[in-house]
Amino acid sequence: MKKIVLAITGASGSIYGIKLMEALLAANHQVHLVVSSQGEKVVQYELESLENILGQYIDKDLIYHDNADLFSSIASGSFKTDGMIIAPCSMGTLGKIAYGISDSLLTRVSDVCIKEGRPLIMVTRETPLSPIHLENMLKLSRLGCTIFPPVPAFYTHPESLDTVIDQTVARILSLLDIQHPSYTSWGESYDQ
Ligand SMILES: Cc1cc2nc3c(=O)[nH]c(=O)nc-3n(C[C@H](O)[C@H](O)[C@H](O)COP(=O)(O)O)c2cc1C
Image 1 (cartoon, protein in one colour):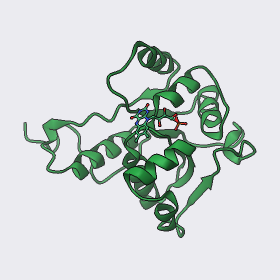
Image 2 (image 1 turned 60 degrees about the horizontal axis):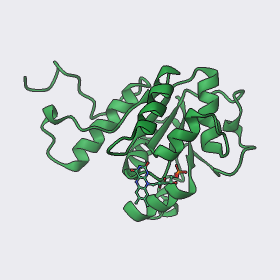
Image 3 (image 1 turned 90 degrees about the vertical axis):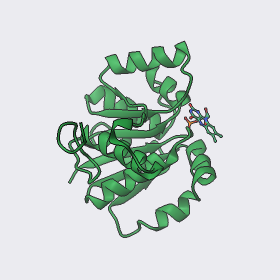
Image 4 (image 1 turned 180 degrees about the vertical axis):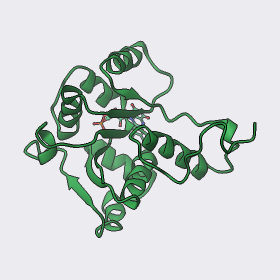
């Protein structure tokens, strides 16, 4: 069982965060969820209310942390986790993390991951990318973070949007050595 911090920010693509949460809980991992206030609004706009969604997981190993609560366990490096995924990750949050601005639980835990050398995967979503975005991404990548724009793979011949999302989720989880049923590697199952 791994302890994963999952963060959702106000970029489009909140489905990635929710599907990652579902997959982690289904595989019996512990999820520490933190959502920015704009992230909560975009979840509601793109899907349904966060409260309704979380209500479906009350019997699971899901710990919800208030983004304003900097006294939370995950705010400290002494609380060991196996890494953090920010999905989706807005350019605003990316910029704050790149400059060490730990003004919320979400940005503080990201800062902790970097200082403790833990995996930090940022599912960045924006297009086109400005030089500011690109410089921030390069800086974070050089610091050991994984910049993971959710780019679909068309060589898998996906039949639906759900398939595209599941394959991205599987690929993200594979970076943390977590299995997902939709994961297939090139050379094994795809027609070549
Ligand atoms: C519907 C909607 C979609 C958005 N999509 C993006 C996006 O894909 N990428 C991005 O960087 N910002 C996007 N934004 C803007 C962010 O929500 C905004 O920059 C916000 O301040 C991010 O705050 P947070 O990082 O604290 O969640 C979107 C805003 C809305 C309302």
